[in-house]
Image (cartoon, rainbow, N blue to C red; front, side, top):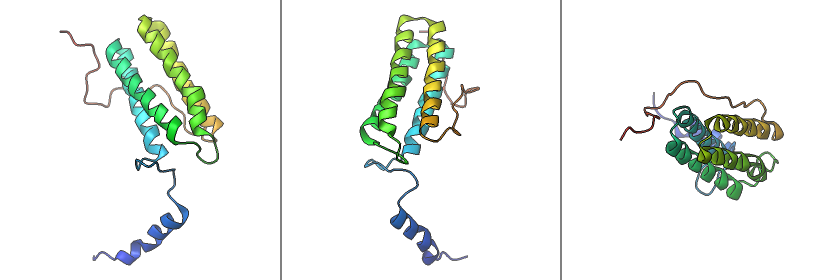
Length: 152
């Protein structure tokens, strides 16, 4: 079967005329890509907390916070919802509260604040008409990575 470049023309024209499905930032990343990145950092932070590896959890929370700040700075709105402002008002305080509990070494409070962080994600999804997206604690470790603290 030969490639027909004209067959792709209707889809290409639709993208040019209608724009991409999600906002695309100057970096070329859409909001969905940034959300996926945040979900990965959140899952890795969860696995780090479960392993009681504070330095690693702190690392992933820092990456999560940087991605959230990127959204605050570069995604003013999505589907007419103020995603940047909601991220600043809902997610960033939850990250900071989790960082504080982690810094205090209070693992029980860290667990509660991690749950609150996930709830902030879900509350934002509801506030933006995307309540069908529900974030829950992840089961298992799909990563080729050990989250336990180093023994050395």
